[in-house]
Length: 612
Ligand code: ADP
Ligand code: MG
Ligand code: ZN
Image (cartoon, rainbow, N blue to C red; front, side, top):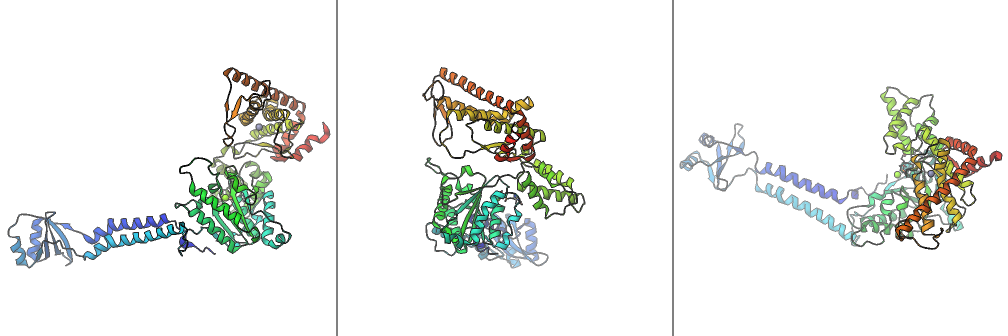
C-alpha cells in the first residue's frame, strides 16, 4: 500500500469545522464549569447560620448584581461557592469579624483567573492562528508559491499496487469488444519498446463510454491488473473543491506522480464533471474553477511523452456533454463503448459473480439472463448477491433458482428504469417494430445498410434500435435519400399496424424525426414546389436544430399540409414494402426476439436466404 499522502487528505473545511466545534464546546461547557463551579443559592438566614457555625471562610459583596458571594465548607469539608441575596443588615460586618471571616468587595473564585483566561482566550486564539497559517500557506501555493512542504494541492490519487487492483479481464464478463480494444493498451504497457522501436505511438488516452454499471471502472482496473502496473484512480467529482485553483494543482500533481511511477495507468472516473463543454459566451461568474481544471488536464495531456508508458483512461456516461477539446487527436481520441450486456453477456456476468457464491445443483443462468433484459452488470452482480442473502434468510446454505428469480424482481423493481425490463409481449412488439425499420431500409436503394438491430432497452429511453451506418461519411443528402429515410422511420409503426392491427406509443421519437425531416425538406432545403425560398431559418449553429418560421400564416398552413402529405406518402411506401415481405418480417422478428441483438450480416443472411 503506497497511500502516501494521508496527511493532506482532509479538505480545509474539515479543520475549520473542528476548530469551531472545539471553541464552542469550551465556551459552552468547560468555561462555566471552571469559573462558576456549582454556585449554589442560599437563603440569607442560612448564610448567617453558616457564618455563626464558623464554616464560612470568605465573603464578598457583589454590588453590580446586588448579592453576596461567599465560600463555605460543606459537610464533607469541601469548599463551595454560594451566593445569597443582599438583605439590609447593619450587624453583618460585626458578625463576620467575630467569626474571623475574610471579607471584601471582590468576588472570590476557587480557581486562578489564569484558567479562565486560558480557556476563554488563549486556546481559541491559538486555534485560529494555526488555521490562519494553514490558509495562508494554501494561498501561497495557489499564487504560484508551491515551496511549502504541506502540500494541500496534492492530488488525492490513490496509488494502488497491482496486487491490490487484483482485477483481471477474467473478472469482466462479456464486453468482448471493449476488452479487445484494451488488450492493445495492456500490450503497450508490458512491452513499450516494441512500439517505440517501430515508431508507433499509442493513443495517450482512451475514453470508456457507456451507461452506469456496465463495468467501466472494472475494465480500467483490469487493464492495470493485467499489465501489472500501478493504477492511479481519481474521480472527476474529487477535483471540484472549495478553493479556486485546487483542481488544477491536483491535475498537475497527479501527472507528476504518474510520470514518476511510469509505466502506469491514470484513471479519471466521471470525467464529465470536469470535462463539460466550456461556455462560449456568458461573461460573469461561470465556472472558472472547472474550466481551469479542464485546461490544466488538456495541457498535461499534451505535455507528457506518450512513449513513457503512462496511459490515461477515463470513463463517462455522458459523452455528448464532453468538451470537444478533450476528444481531439492526442487526447482521448480513442472511444471504447461499454454497452449494456446482451443475453449471452448477461449470462456470463451472472456466472462470474456466481463463482463467489455457493450455488445449488439445478441452476439455469440462461433463464435469469433472459429475465433481465436491460439490466447492467452492476445490477446482475446485485441480483446474485440478493439471491445469496435470500438463501440465508430462508435458512439454506446454498442458492436456488427460486432465490435468483425472486431477487430479479426485487433488484429490478428497485431501480428507476423499472420499465427497462420488458414483458414478453412488449419485446415482441419492439422486435417487429425494429425489423419494420430495417426491412424498409433494406428494400430501398438509397438507404444506408443496416449494421445492428437490438431490442435491449437503452437508458436514453429507447426500447430498441436499428443502426444504419454508411460506408463512407457523406455530407449531402439527396431528395431520394431523405424520402427513404422518412419511409424507414415510419417502418416501425407500419410493422406494428400490419402485425398487431394496432399501434403503440413506441414510435413517438420516429414521428418527431420524420416530421422534422419532412419539414426541413420543404422549408429549408427547397425540395418542394415552394422552390428555393427560405421559409424557416436556423436559430444558431450551437443551439441544436431550433428554428424560427419566416413566412405568412397562409404559407405556414400550406407547409403543414405538405408535411402531412409527404410523411403520408412515405408511410404508404413503408406499408407496401412490408406487405410484400411479410414472410421475412415474421422470420426476422422471431429471430431478433430470441437473440435480442443481431448484426447486419445476420439480418442480410436471413433476408437473402431461400431467395423468396
Ligand atoms: P461503471 O463504472 O460502468 O458504472 P462498475 O465498473 O463500477 O460500473 O461496475 C460495478 C460493478 O458491477 C462491478 O464492480 C462488478 O461487480 C459489476 N459488473 C459490471 N459489469 C460487469 C461485467 N461486465 N462483468 C462482471 N461484473 C460486472
Ligand atoms: Mg464507475
Ligand atoms: Zn422506431
